[in-house]
Amino acid sequence: MSTTSSASERAVLTVAELSDRLRAVVEEGFPAVWVEGEISNFRVYASGHAYFTLKDEQAQLRCALFRTRARRVKFEPGDGQHVLAFGSVEVYAQRGEYQLVVELLEPRGLGALQLAFEQLKQRLAGEGLFDQARKRPLPRFPRTIGVVTSPDGAALRDILRVIGRRFGDVHIVVAPARVQGDGAAAEVAQGVRDLNALGGVDVIIVGRGGGSLEDLWAFNDEMLARTLAASKVPIVSAVGHEVDYTIADFVADVRAATPSQAAELVVGEKAAIADALADLTCRLTRAAARPLRDLERRADDLTARLRQAMRVALGDARHRVTLAARALRAGSPHVRAAHGRERRAHLDATLARAIARRLDRERHRLVAVSGRLDSLSPLAVLGRGYSLTLSAERRVIRSWREVRAGDGVRVLLGEGSLDCRVDTAREQDDRPAV
Figure 1: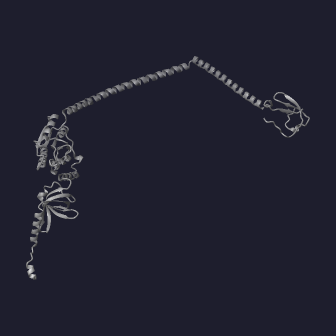
Figure 2 (figure 1 turned 180 degrees about the vertical axis):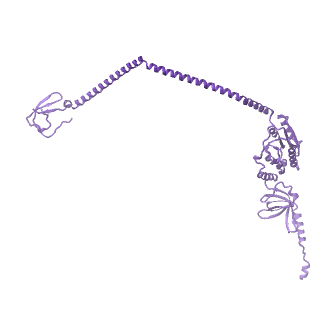
Figure 3 (figure 1 turned 90 degrees about the horizontal axis):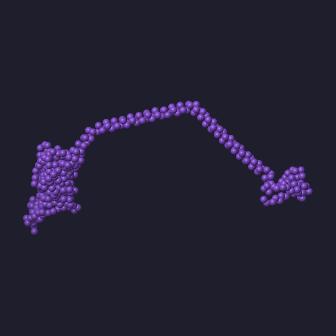
């Protein structure tokens, strides 16, 4: 086969033709598909169209979210979010790329409405719209109450019933508004603005009955939240039941769990107000009577102090009289003579006692000296079994050398004496055992 012949038999396509064929295959093969992945490179252009990439660990897919579809997305898409995207696969011939044209976009796990709620809540909290410092107290005795709700709903009936039972004379102005569906947030916001412009409204209740997150979504609207925050009249949010919270609840000055509770918060019981008036009257009466009672107490106190001073002065005078009488009695001659006699008798008794004590001391000394003399007397020593030997010349013999054999001696005993003759005199001492 020749080269010329081979070339003429080739099927040659232009780039546009190939792109058209690929587009037909891709778009017909994937007219509607759900794709899961992580958002990256999310960009919104001035046209309102958004472009981003869905990716996982193995691949990535370019995506386009056009303005009309972006308006239906309840949350704010952003990088790093794990989402489910529904749409069709198309080929973008100018760049030779395929992309997913997104019709629906939902967060994976957390619902779209819940995510949108959390995102708006975080942003408004960062701006300070939820701060307690900007919350205003409710008026204690409102004369005119504004209500923004559906005129056909149970919320309005509950509010009117509670207010009529507790304080029927208060004036109520109703700003009718849809509380569910498209355009509901705008109507509620307009009702709040109308009541502010009306003037004379003391407090505004914005509310509806409970429902699902979708039913309450109008009260999670950013525009409505900013309208409530800008209101010059205090706002009571009464949206849903106890477990339901909306952005309006966080922005409002006071949050009520139900419309009935909102009505109870803005009006007081007649009996409670009457009791308060009675209490004020009683306090006023006590305040008026207090100065008079204070003067009476002061007069009583001064009277008591005067009586006490008089009793003290009288007691002092009596004491001085007693002292003077005693002084006069002490200066009398009879009293002085009696004192002299008493003093002499006292001195006589004192002298007698001193003499007796001195005699006792001397007697004790004599007994002691006699005892010591008796203890030193030789007779006392002889009485204990000892003897005293005397020579013929009546000298006390103290040594064997003073006598000789054949000398006569006298031995004095404790009782009597012995005349003896010395048989032997020796130095050896044979003393008997005592």
